[in-house]
Amino acid sequence: MNVVIIGAQWGDEGKGKIVDYLAHEAGIVVRFSGGANAGHTIVLAGERYALHLVPSGILYPDKMVVLGSGMVIDPEALFSELGDLVERGIDWEGRVLISDRAHIVLPRYKEVDKAEDARRRKPIGTTGRGIGVAYSMKASRDGIRLADLGDPDRLVNLEPEDRAFLDKWRGKLAPMIVDASAYLARHRNSWTLFEGAQGALLDIDTGTYPFVSSGMSCAAGAAAQGGIGPRHIDRILGVFKAYTTRVGNGPFPTEFDDDSPGSLSNYIRATGNEYGVTTGRPRRCGYLDLVALRYACRVNSLDRLVLTHIDVYDALPEFDACVAYKINKRLIEDFPASIKDLEEAEPVLKKFPGWQTPIDACASWEELPLRTREYIEFIEDFTETPVSIISVGSDRLKTIVKESPWIRS
Ligand code: IMP
Image: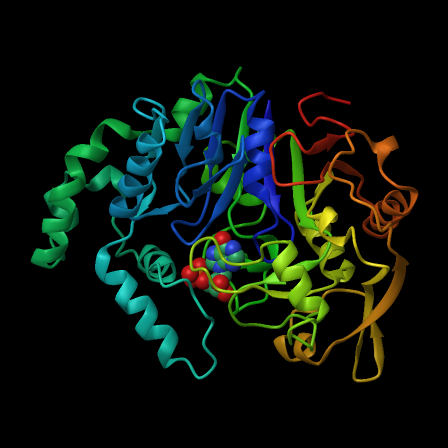
């Protein structure tokens, strides 16, 4: 059985925790896009793990993890991350596989990435990890795939320092490289989790272009870039937060305009620990944008939603969520493509009463306060997508499962 998990907002929705939680029942976890720009946080027995390239199933000693063909991989960052895992007692040898169709990020891509973003009149605010450069090289047919690392004909155009870099890592990478689609076909009876990076609104096609990343963070990417055919996807889950955050630049219709000390924005950032895992940048914060979330449900054909960070609202007497936009005095209910429209969009807000009690000890749907349940039910009705899992705290165990994706309904 194949379950896909993607972010349904602008990334940082808490996918790492949910993948880690669901990986308990999986045999294989496949990351299908992005690179070291991602930051997936998992809290286990009070210890915090930040993963960037390695799929979130690695913390279980018996899971295989695969870096899929849609990924762009900086070997230096990968081995540094694996080294950190070893230092913390996690043995990865023999459990990390890399698709032979994945691409390499060379060190100089990072400098080019930063220089190109600085040159833009409206910078994207990239993570500076060379991601966009690697995907550009892939699209222009100048990229380097793992499968071709040993083929001198494929490397003729490289500068001596690029070759020296590849020479350094070739031997260490070699035992990990596989034909991922053949591997997954051989293990078709395993339960496999496909982990998206970033989020639907940062996807190169479905996102707020050009203020997006350059990989496929939409659900379709699991098939195109994860190593299975689209017909073999059984379930698609979209993870979203009770509010919205965004790192880097680009339109954000529900962003709070007051970010001063004591503001709601600051409160949410501090309570939800809204700082980039990869760059440490403070995240921009705003209310939940249901127009954007409904769009993400539609373009990814989400079967179920997974709600995270709802406990961040515990102390609030009331809060809002955006149910439409006003653009040029017109009421807009569909998420627009135009950046200008999104920048001009004024959110139409609906108010919700807060529950003003801690919910992190709730272990079932019934234990959640009535007002929490009413907020979730409104989201389900609005998006026409049931919420099947609710995270009420960062620890793996603080998770309410209304319906497991592993059980066919
Ligand atoms: P890039 O992926 O480094 O090219 O950055 C492009 C945009 O995507 C920037 O706005 C980044 O902040 C954003 N971005 C990239 N990766 C993530 C992520 O994992 N979480 C949230 N935002 C991200």
